[in-house]
Amino acid sequence: MTPDLQLLLCLLSPFLGALACLAVGPRPRVSAALAILAVAVSLAAALGLVAATAAGEAFAVHAGGWSAPFGIVLVADTFSALMLAVCQLVTLAALVTGAALLPARWHRRHFFPLVLTLSTATCGAFLTGDLFNLYVWFEVLLLSSFALMAVMRGPGARAGAWRYVLLNLVSSLLFLAAAGLIYGKTGSLNFADLHQRFAGADDAFLVKSSTALLFGSFAIKSALLPFAFWLPASYPALPPAVSALFAGLLTKVGLYAMFRVFGMVFATDTFPHRDLLLILAVATMLGGVLGAVAQGGMRRILSFHIISQVGYMALALALFTPLALAAGIFYLVHHIVVKANLFLVAGLVERRAGSSELDRTGGLLRAAPWLAALFAVPALSLAGIPPLSGFFAKFALLRSSLEIGDTLATTAIIGVGLLTVFSMLKIWRTAFWGEAPTGAPAKPASPLAITSSAALAVVTLGLGLAAGPLFGLAETAAEGLRHPTAYLDAVLGAGNPPSPETASGK
Amino acid sequence: MSILLAITIGLLVAAGLYRLLGPGRIDALVGLILLGQAANLVLFASGGLRHNAPALISDGMAEPSDPLPQALVLTAIVIGFGIIAFLLTLVLRAAGNDHDA
Image (cartoon, each protein chain N blue to C red):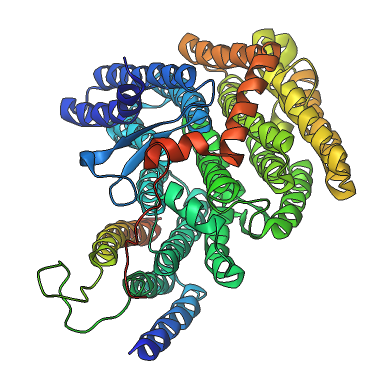
């Protein structure tokens, strides 16, 4: 199969799956099977794309045969392919757990089609080659996640969902206005075309003013600190399968957009707002982890950790050396797998102990050693213990910050790492070691849900053991962002003819 | 014309933000709608403002207007409409549930 077909299959398979699920109606087993099949096909296609782009190639599909700066393009380079593969893997795990654990009322409420549209939108966001389509995919993503959130129960949950909806809509509007301003100034929205135009642009002030709107929009979506409070308010109240899906995908799509737009499209030797990003990233790392230390519920701790880890990845972009970018991409891959798995395991703990509040759990190590093992792998990886994947991500980031000699970043990486270990130990000490509370209602463990968590844990181990080749892939992806010749060739045609003016008379 | 549009957009943003920070959910929703219209106008203005110019180039037309922002703004309006409809349902349903409780 050619890479072009794989690219389309990646995007179309979940979409067709969603339609099929809607068509079969309220038959949970059939729609579960269809949904899992659709995402598995998409995952296989994404893995094919990773193999096809492993040496830094890029492939573009021009919709309707319209040539590049005018028509709609879908592009896959190494970075997109990696993100696609890992996101589809996590979606698959969340779907399996959802099929096994969610009560029937969720299945009646279109759980599977909504997850599939969410998956389509993530694929679309990773593959799109222009700014306005990125906006459209963001909206599809938001609507799917709104609908998934809207079926929640309880007043606290609803308030959290409202905060999520409101902040993300403001972010979309900022994005829309930014797209308008950028089109007004450059006459193009195509990433490759924009990159070429900005390379020779000299109106730094005008560029900065419109990219500031984009920056704000992405900062909200990826939960950088002043805008991060929607996340811990909304995630912990969701059912485990859904919160795992959101934890794995939502903020990471925002980060992907930031890497793609600021790391490639508007980047030359540096990019607009880099100093601001550095400060916000460090503040996010610190604020997130301090928030986590103060929490007493497993899923609330994990939610604050997402924020702190988002800070790490944003820091990698802000440092902007080839090594730091590669570390950031490796971090993204590692983080998506580990974080989604931690939320899945938290769901298993809730099922076993009746609650994931730390003061109402305990003694799980003796009662359910398998559960302790399932938690230990992603938790140690998150904390950055070798030989798991988190260690290599943090180590590469630390090394690049030492190379630059950025004291602030170095201190933050080490300090926040220690605090992360501390809060993972807190969960371990109380939930797994402490005394078991009496009379906790234990529901039977679900083999399917355990299998999907175990599979993700094995992937985490694999990412750690195969860190060398994977880091090589991340370096190729980073190189593709810094010097996107393959990307430009694929989109604009070999030799990159200078694009004609699309908008005249401004 | 440009100045008038710029002032309108500014007023819409100001009013939208003010409502967004208001106490109720309907307030916030109205604020979002106003902000959305401001964003749509920015997008619309990005193609340049031209009076009485056709969108498609035909012979003898020296200065056609740019059709792309118009297509973009239509897309944005449709998406915005869908989202506002969804949010309204959410707000109304939440209000109804609170009544029951």
